Amino acid sequence: MVAVVALVLAAAGCDPGGSGAQDVEVVAGAGEADGGPAADAFIDGRLVDMVMDRAGTLRVLTEVDAVATLWTVQGGQLTHVAVPEVKADYVSQMTAGPDGAIYVALWNGEGGVWQIKPDGRAVHTLGIDRDTYSGDRVPPADGAPVKGAFLQYMHGVAVSADNRMYFAEERIRPTTFQLVRTVDAGKLKTVLGRDLTGLTERQWRSSRAGKGFPDGSPATQIALEGGLDNPIAVAPDGTVYAAPGRRTVVAVKPDGSARKVIGREGLDGDIDDPSEPFEARGSASEASVWLKGSGSVRQGTTNPSLVVDANGDLYLTSSRSFGEDLPESFDWTGDATGRQEELLVQSRDSLDGRTEETEVLRVKPDGSLSTVAGHADAVAVHDDWLYLARSFTDDEGDNRVLVVKTAIAR
Image 1 (tube, rainbow, N blue to C red):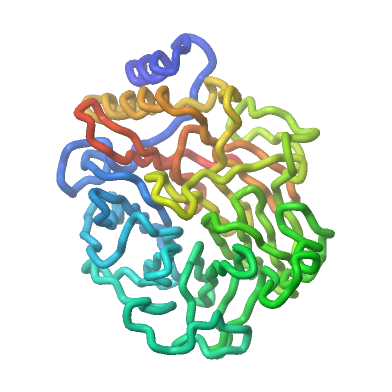
Image 2 (cartoon, helix red, strand yellow; image 1 turned 30 degrees about the vertical axis):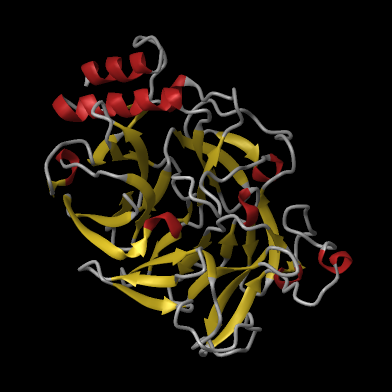
């Protein structure tokens, strides 16, 4: 362990004898084997998304030459399957249902929501086929049957514990806006976002997620402007979380009332800088946020993560402002040797070429905020473990993904 600690900290430009880094355990992607023990196998390609199901099975979605591959870590073993029917460039979010079913939402107007089967087949679950659709091309109102509904642009998807699907639908008239919707008894129902169709600009600008709104406001009266990916998560108590525009996170309670969880306009307010993983920093309401990820263009970046655990704690990946480097305590270290050690160091070296740093934020139900990890592109949670995925380019110039886990401090 001493060797890898020294190497990882040296790669970060630190003194190995100084303050400690964050202890991690390699989960997958730190080897060259094609499957088998996950820690010693490779995960290649650009990282698109990562999700953990309720049974503890981890899925990683990657892309090589626009072709998607779904990697599965179960019982310490790694397997993978190609998903040729899904255009990885257009995936806005991947999620897992309570039964372990995997779904992806596509934002390009051709996809809707698809379920990825264990053999890699993709089954169209929600939305239209733009090339063959012959119905009314009018965005459906609440109460319309979901079957055959003209749903095109999907910017997020999540499935609750009772197997109810939620999705973020984008519309482009009278301006670009989104609605977070679900299906109730076969009919569409909006849970967050105001339908701006037919409204004047003065009307729809009165209450907007990005500009703030009073806590307790009806969620369906808040305009969600913008066309960026809108990740969604559902808590065990039925609270729906969404990140419209990726500059704010909004929570919608089962009674339909909304509150802003995090997303102060401009710079951070009265809040401490991160110093140690899991250390309390103050109220999340005082923090600005920029959920890491791509928008409605092919940028080749990882989707933003938004995850709720069994305790109701919310985790998200956020980009830090230029020049706001995380302290050494957020570097990764762990018990690794041989090729695992080499790739851990290579993944850290690859961060030097980035123009921004990423932190993993946690917001507890009481509103307190902490930075729980750094230098991760995606996050997942299961039991008392936080799973972190890092996308990097190895010494051979190949895109790879490394997954580690670290113990959660409650």
